[in-house]
Image 1 (spheres, helix red, strand yellow):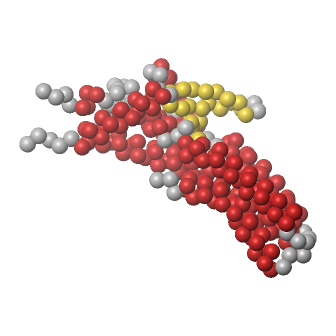
Image 2 (cartoon, chains in turn blue, red):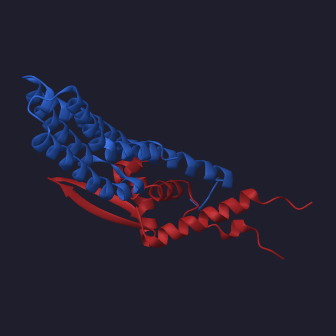
Length: 144
Length: 102
């Protein structure tokens, strides 16, 4: 086969566009991973510190399951996206900081029987903890 | 007298399967062999043959890894391959934007 047999420049551009869209579509899984983990983060802290039994136990088990599933997904990815690579380091760093802050708030600051103001504060802290992941998810899912 | 830009098309890239491989790897950091096979819709042997051509041209890097006992083949563009693909895209655009002389 000679190079380019039967392929016009327009066909070449069209094929490049098709493959590019397919690769980007496959990369969207990482975006959903960020969004799902972000939403789980928002639910996790109130469930752990405000929920009655067995809600904290369910939240803890759910978190372990999410960690296992996301690790398996991360290892089995078939295509690595450059945007995900660029975001991964800063987002992981920011997420560690916001999660540690949420942990410190829940353990050291929040009273044992929180008034509605404290509950609202915990929800805000949970949302802030999730922001790095939600931002990463939004960036990946809206990438071109 | 100017030469038509089609003569500048890199013939290593300007072939149906190799073009698809280069386009896929240009959009990714790296992709595994099975993903490329499914995306380009070719047989393992045909894909291997074209990957070898691109590897020999210095455009594609092949990396074999293991997860447990399962082997995986990762493919990525080299810096030279990425530059060649960008040049190829420029030439394609010049051809398609070229207006015929009156």
